[in-house]
Structure formats: structure tokens, C-alpha cells
Length: 182
Image 1 (cartoon, rainbow, N blue to C red):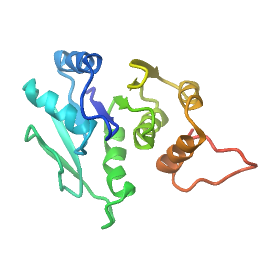
Image 2 (spheres, one colour; image 1 turned 30 degrees about the horizontal axis):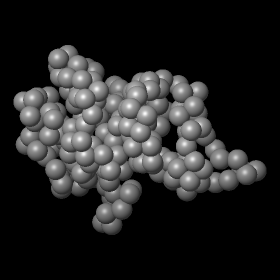
Image 3 (cartoon, rainbow, N blue to C red; image 1 turned 120 degrees about the vertical axis):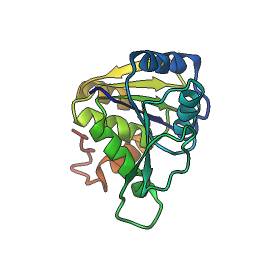
């Protein structure tokens, strides 16, 4: 069964008309949605789905403690194995959603390393990801490593390094070159 992982930047709290239209197509097709519980895009997507009365939603929460579940949908408690509520604590649920999803829709503010880490998680599993680049107000479809490289080429070194750390852990340098996520 096809499932879509919808996520994005915590700095974005409103969905553009273009993103709402994409979500409407997901609703019209009855595709189940996997969404996190963070403020920002997660909460905005939940609000939109709840207002539309959409029920095919599952909210993923770290250690079962949901920060947001606006539609009172079923929750998926994802064990984190740690007590400290840092990036890794919340990333565990993202990893699980990427594994269970068939494809992704990510709403990106042009800076969020966490959003790009989710893109990488999906692409490494040969899953298509549609990225809405909010600053440019356009959709990008990524299917392969070359698409990923093109997306990252427009980012500053600081963002690329954060993404590599977020998606793969500490970054070993080899001859001054960053390693690929693939």
C-alpha cells in the first residue's frame, strides 16, 4: 500500500496554496499520510488534514509523547533509546516514517538540515521525494543521487555539513572532501 511521509521545516507554520493543492491530491486518492508531531510544517499539515476531515493519518511521536496530534489520529510511538530530547531523539521517528513510506513530500525553508536529512533517508531507499522549496516557491522531484547533488549544490557549505551530520552521524573528512550520503 502506498503511503506518503509529509514533513518539513519547523520555521514554516503556514502551507502555501501550491502545497495545499498537492495535499488535496493525496486526499483525493485516499493515500495514507505519515506525519510527525513537531511544530511548524508537521502541525500545519495536521491542521490542514484535520480541517479537511481526512482520517487516513498516522502521527509518529518519539517515545509515544506527542507534542501535536490535532486530529486525534492513531499515534505510532517510536522508541528512541535515549532520555535527552535532542536532534537524535526526534530523528528516530523520522527514520521510521522514511522506512514505512512509499514516497515523500517535504516542505523546505531553504535552511533546515532536518528536512534535507529526511529527503536523503527516502532517496537512500530508492523512494521518490517531492520537495517544495518555499523560498523559490517551486516543487522539485528527486529520484536519484544526481537530483540530490543538484539540490545540495545550491546550499552553502554550512547547510551541507549539517545535513551530512544529521543523516549519517559524525562526518569523517577524506582528503578534504565530504562523503556522499549514498
